[in-house]
Amino acid sequence: MGLRQALALPYQWIEIDTRKGETRTPQFLAMNGAGQVPTVAFDDGRTLAQSNAIMRYLARDSALIPRDAFTAAKMDEWLFWEQYSHEPYIAVCRFLMVYLGKDASELDPEKVKRGYAALDRMEQHLSANRFFAGEAVSLADVSLLAYTRVAHEGGFDLGRYAAIRRWIGETEALLGLPPAR
Image (cartoon, rainbow, N blue to C red):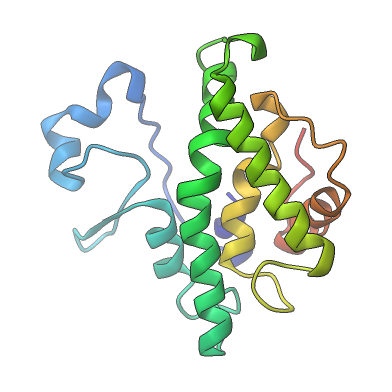
């Protein structure tokens, strides 16, 4: 949502219900053999999967990718970190609560612990830095914002994370997003 708005990209959204097996149909598997969302299908027939690969492609000529090679590499560092140390915990807990109706008390304590560890790491970084890669918002911020701004929906309390809350508000405003509920 944030990237599409920031780049004013035209698109057609097609809702895919993973719980109903819609990513396992022959039609979907022809686009993405891994059977995962998100997947983008371009008008010329090419497809691209994995959220950060999609974002990197769509933003390739934008200011969201730092021009300095080292800063761009730091952005990539945070993109990889998001996929392996943030999303598996914060997004999964949110999915269980929002889409499967689980209560916070039913969540895997290890996932919750690792989710808070991810938030602690973000807070530490943002206490000394305005953004995740350099002095301007980048794809690292877009990627991390997606689930951090709704972490409370996964049972995570952002009350003790002043730097994260500041960053969420500033990044939402810069990307033209309404504040998360």
